[in-house]
Image 1 (cartoon, rainbow, N blue to C red):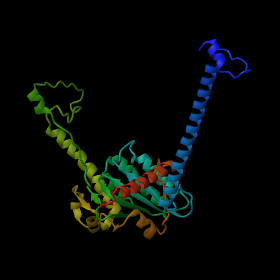
Image 2: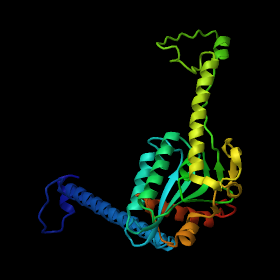
Image 3: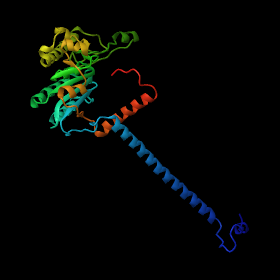
Image 4: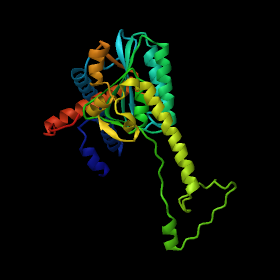
Length: 328
């Protein structure tokens, strides 16, 4: 646009604007409009997120019992500690974590009884032994506070090693209980190496330093030594079970063969005292239905996230037709 054309777009008598000023003004207006739109979109995004959060909180409050925010010290309550997964160092079911939770549960002034809910296939006999020892110590230190073990899906091997320290053991009729035994397993690749023409070169200081080496032939003296170790640990396990269960055991040495049984069979064999859930124990045995969770590592945000996720999953399952057959 030349000067004469630019002059024509102005009203008569209006001051003449320098060339290019109207373009800069237009760009400034467009930039300001874009910034305004971004701010508006950001406000709506924040409002939307707050709305979703509010909906989830309302859903949580409606769907959960009144004690879902309980963190201890809220009056008389049944204390809950969860032992889940493999019992091993650095795991969620390590001795350090479980002992910390149990100590907190017993120490709390409002605790009337402690429920140790177990769902574990076993694990380290050392870690299980630490937990068993601490439970018996806490029961002596707090004689008025009983501890009940409640088995959900599985309480085998090291899991049962822990459970026998309780005053009583409860399970579901379909729970898996037992496996009182010790094992050590591995592989042997000697024949595979021979077929591949691989030569094994192994240097040691100490004739038994390479004991049970998977690339060397198995020696009878090594097997005998390992069996002796396993038998010793097995005898320790049996002693702990006998100490914890006493005259309630009713099936002799068959119980210590490594076999597993259902919860209903466990009652008949004396491995379990009664069928019942954690809720049943809190309500009918301890007599205080309010349950406070002392499981280590579960902050209030952890609990909210778990409960919200469960509530949303249940809602979606019903809405899309997946609320059918389930085993609980």
